[in-house]
Image 1: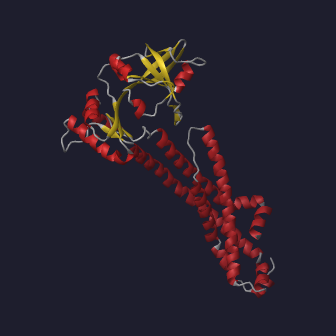
Image 2 (image 1 turned 60 degrees about the vertical axis):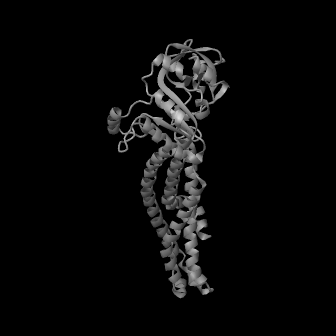
Image 3 (image 1 turned 45 degrees about the vertical axis):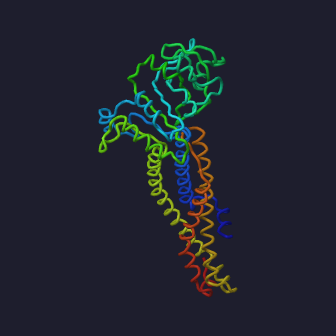
Length: 400
């Protein structure tokens, strides 16, 4: 193709010609990569409480500062009694667990960590949550019954406090109190750059022995299976309202947090980013289309005699029209492919050196190149039509 030969011969001019297409495709792919990567990351790391698990907290997720002030007056803390009532009466749950959380200082010999999440849990949280022992064991019912001073610690906490040592059987100081390490959890990784492995899990009874019974907790409910998840949530809400004597016209005085609601809020946020990017990409595409049209018009002028020769040898208007439309589409497609390569390279660098999750889906690549080719096709319509209308005799007489 003459258009492709021109691209190869005049590399700088070709790059400047296709710059708008390259920029639009690259921008579109990077935005899609960020949105797709963030959604997958959020679903796996933030909105994942465990298999078929939802939570009952004092406040709902995404509470604004204004609502927070109001809810602090109306929403009571989640108590052990709430947990026991729900555990004993819910019918669609496989497991019901309870957890307290607070930030404490951890220490082993001369090493310490200022912010360690101390979690007081029921023994069945090992089945409900995502924390699994890599070495040793989780908290047991016997630990809970005896209010034992034992802990399973996170992977990062073990690495930072017990570097080069086996932590099992050692005594770690948590908020100034000694606990025997009975297990080290599997690595959970980071969430938006923050480690999820600096925690220590102790029996809920031991936690309440030291910190009292007036702190709010969180009830973790594991539905029997995915199909009854919504029904289990409805049942838990009704039981909590009944236990707390909430009237029919009153709002819940607790927050039921389930993964799909978290994902819905997150996807609304990322869709705003995607919508904004469409406007930017549209501007680049228009610029790219105008430049390609100008180049094709110049090409028609430069190749007037060639068109005349082709027509005198039997080429129809349709043949000439198709030739220039294909060349315009191919030019734009080349720009699209360059944009795809640039987007993959930039996405790789962002993923490697920043906490931003990037994931370029295959469908986005196909759509991007397709859109670029379509823009080239549209921008080539007028030049192609002009070339097809040329009179062969006048074209042969033309001198550039």
